[in-house]
Image (tube, rainbow, N blue to C red; front, side):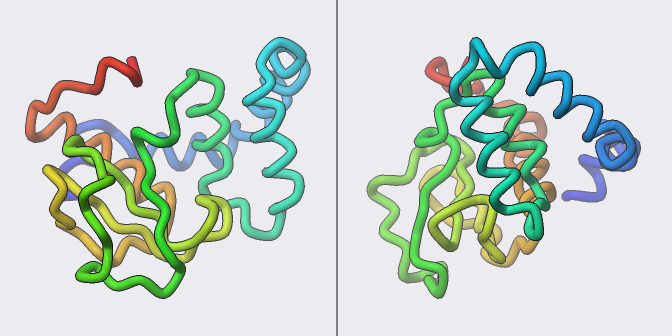
Length: 149
């Protein structure tokens, strides 16, 4: 499914360009918008603190910049949680990432949930996890939650 989504949307080019142009975009956000957008500034500070584990940090900054509500997109569980141990009552019915750990910046494992059911329990990169989540909205024609628009 990830390969199909990448072919459909050109995500391979996205990741290549993100590596090439990410620093310039981050600098732009930091200098132009960070004074106005506290969440962007906080994400930039997290990025600076987690520099050694920066996979997915750029995506998190974009989510903060566009004012996405983290609680609608991510559900946090213990780092060692297995899929069958996740309590699904608090997980939204819309596609949601279950983060195994206390932060998207430091997590080594993510799970994807749709309709409060885990459909993938072994996603190792935040970039892939976020693409799969948005890919499911697209592939299954699921309406994006009003609170996140």
